[in-house]
Image 1 (cartoon, rainbow, N blue to C red):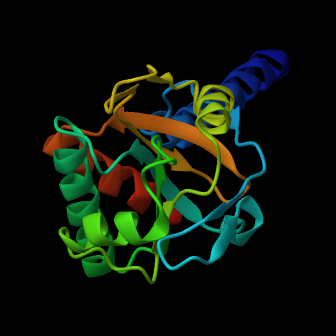
Image 2 (cartoon, helix red, strand yellow):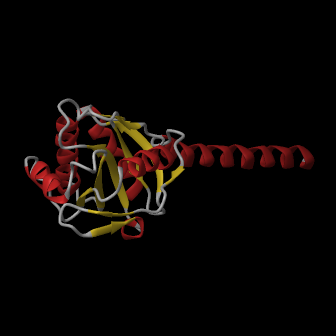
Length: 198
């Protein structure tokens, strides 16, 4: 009888442990997209000609994307989405930063980036538009740090690039990606940031 009671007690403890693990895991799974990519160290120049490094972003969550100012297709709506995301994060008092990497650095100098960003009422207190590298460098950086294809063909003014937005954690690891052209995905980013910052 005692042995039987001991077995039931043991099984109860295992069931409770599984239940608790399931509860903890369910929250994490809401933001799990099997992305776990370490961002390479960088030292680039923003729209105000200030240096921004990966170390400057350490300790905070940030949302990254890749755009260029001469883009005639996806970049304006992507930047509009990022601006809306920035405003919503401010409204919800979320401590997060935003980074837009130019994929056309030869054309996009700081002044050009700022002129472009001003069209979307970007708040530069926590949003950096970065340049100050070669075309080859940004293509390599995007591929290694975000698994994102960037490609500019000589003689053309348009650049092929992925349209994802990425959440990067305070340790500098990309942990999730989203469609940057979808306004619905911006809501998901806000939901995920609320979970991460809770």
